[in-house]
Length: 288
Image (cartoon, rainbow, N blue to C red; front, side):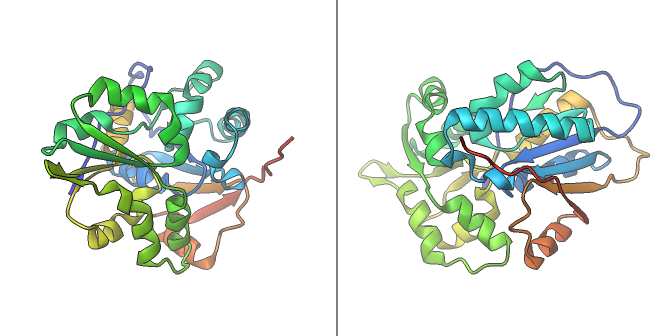
């Protein structure tokens, strides 16, 4: 079962559009494809650009100051190239680190993605909730503040999965991924005590829903998996308005800053998601 959250942003609703809007969905890798699917479902008329900064993937492995400067530089180029009406930051790490700086630098509205702690606390019956996220998101004070604010009566287990995003990318690229490797990443989420056991798991990285069917099959017991993507799309609609009825479905462009992982299997997977046009906007990561 899936549950979703309301994702917030500081922006106010925009003036009504008389044309299809341009929406940029941005992530360090392929995880944002889970958000892209919901964005397209909510605004099928939109002209979508999926941008993956794969030259710097994963952001969680980089120092915070490097992530900040990198995202600002890449975003500046993307906005200049595509002139989006709205940008979706389809990455928890990026949202918690960079979103205020993005809003301060650029006039375009941004919608972020944050761990779905509040709806998890509402959904749980046992009071045992796990947050499955990258080690960086687990360390963030922002995440702990969300827990303190919204889940103070719950026992929350923070699980920093070191390799799950890479496994999701590998599977999408057509590489073999063993059940045992996935189970090793998610197993710490399943906590059993005399009072009960985990019944809600927050997917705190947009890559993780790519493997949702696998989790449901191999999990020690059924739980509610909370995916933030539908709520991110709802917030986008709040800002942009409803689809233009007579507009034909808009195109989807995917652009990568490296393209090193663009295998034939990945291109096929992108095509299955409606992405026929794939471009390279080379921006190598240079560490000082």
